[in-house]
Image 1 (spheres, rainbow, N blue to C red):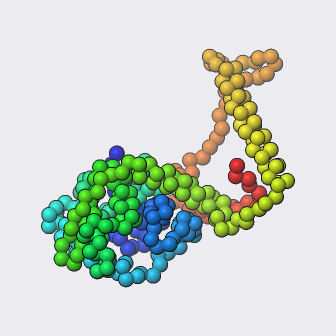
Image 2: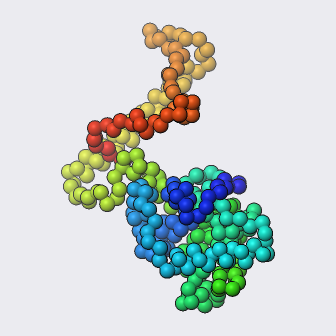
Image 3: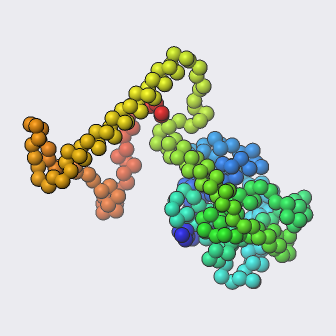
Length: 282
């Protein structure tokens, strides 16, 4: 399936918002434990939840900012159809990336290493997070192969990389778990660092009992739904059975999305915060 392409200029506020609202190719190495920058999963979650802006530009970032356009122009001489769009996965809208260069399923991830790492890269010794970034882009483009384009200030050296399906499975699982935790935080769940670890055996016993009771309630609710379907099976008209009235009805709902469009209103204006209450996330 083809991804949804979005034309955004890298470095703009719209581009930063695009990155903020999903998991980009620079994020996936953090989730897989391959980031060399000592960023933790909790720190990345905090960035997404609190909308923390990008940090100060370091030397590597500045070099990339200066040299990547030159590398892209070099690649364009061999393929004038290359572009640099952003993209969203066809199925999961939180899976997204900014392509350095792409044409159909031909992908180039441009790297501009400094002198200390250039020789290693030209010998095929790549940092693990480079491969993570390219694999993530191949996942989004549904491509079987991608390319690392190593820029040496004069030309781009191309190194093909084949899609790793085992990596893809692990990355999808890690991304799903992480994004669910981000959404949970946005919906009022505390961040990981807001919890304290508690050792209380009496409370632990009550919690275990609560788990069992909750599972029993879930089973009973499932059985009640099955019995209800059996009672109404084959019936078209309202009826009375054993003195119980059984009838068709419906609930009134409101199409809030349509209201926003038709009346140009912002629903956030009408948000009302409830009083704090305890929630046990079993």
